[in-house]
Image (cartoon, rainbow, N blue to C red; front, side):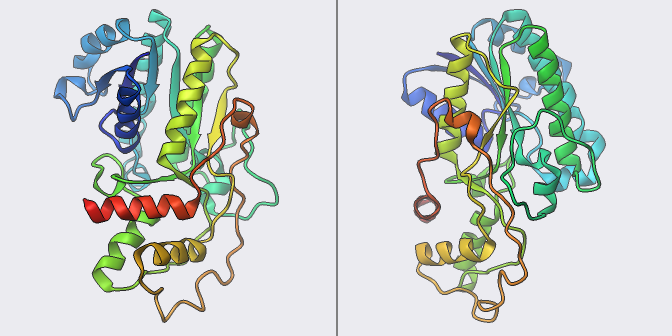
Length: 304
């Protein structure tokens, strides 16, 4: 495999690059953190993009704004991700290179709002823009629709909807703000116990499982097999923050926050996890459970 990875220096891109190189594949990293000329928001990157595309047989488009806070505060700049995705997909079409595009569970308005669900989040092809839709989710929805347009034009492409990813290295990623997992671990070191905030339940997925899912999808595209428009990559399980805090406390060998231990989670209505029916048909299933994933993350942060 000769893979072009946009956003290769981000949290997901770093793990994907490391995995592919360990398997003997060639990786071309495209990221402004490598060279300012590799900033996809600028036309200066046109030359490098087309040259790398001509040398590749697969593309993982991971570049984009990872901070939901940034998107809410600066939506005009966040919408630049839509233009960037279009440029990458157009190049993929010209060079006939299949592509997996990063999307998010936040395209589901009810997941974003933390509303409870009786059923899991299934892969619908289009979503309504509602009061619960964040700017981050809106941008991802628009990119998914552009992916659909290029699919209609003959490009082998799909969107991979990431749920709440966590794992080693996330706390130091420049382009990724981290998750509540790394927040809990970092703060436990500073205050001597595990903070246990209130908030909606989420579907947490370990980074290695996300990488494995993307590899399966790109190989399916390479074979010329039919791809669905989008695939969920999550654990399939909804985890309350109380449960998450308990797992972190076990891994770091510290107590939960004493004042809130009896209160955290009260009144929470657990939302559903990801529906994994499509990706499981391809032979994928999450292999790293929450306890093991947190243990690995804690150990990596301790060593780091």
